[in-house]
Length: 203
Image: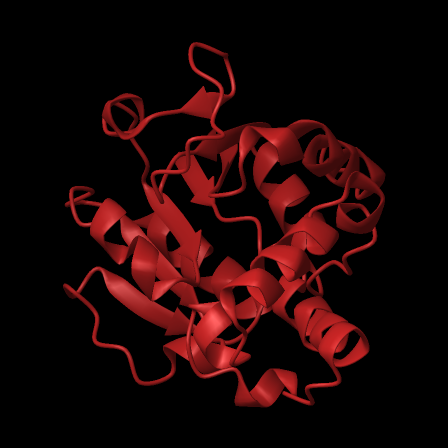
């Protein structure tokens, strides 16, 4: 099977880190559980310059490699690879974060996955023509049977996968979202995702 896994808040606890970062940088106390929107500028009530400053700090390579792994993510993904399945990490991070993201994967024993930076949000900082930087037209040529994602903003990039089983990792910002189709299912941890994967694999 071909598997799509999002990076932030599926593989690692990015928003939990951001919550502490906003507290340190701007003395704004927004607990992780109170992050209502995938739009973090809105969730943290940041001015444009504050948001830019936060994002620059959060994407420094030495910071990116410190994000904590989501419990059981790497062991379960490695078990899928051991069974012969193909796992691609499809992230909306810009290509400037590629090397640090790759280092994070290696540090967490995920060196066998393929990492792609997908230009989901029209950033002009994406590298054209590289083997790991995807524009949407390239992504739409790819096939996936199973998806792990958390962002409601990414749902529109998944609806073309008519036969895929799409797991939405439960996060505060997606609790009340409406799913585009019956292919979408909420999951609460990686062990539940693995059970759903096993069910999908067995048909």
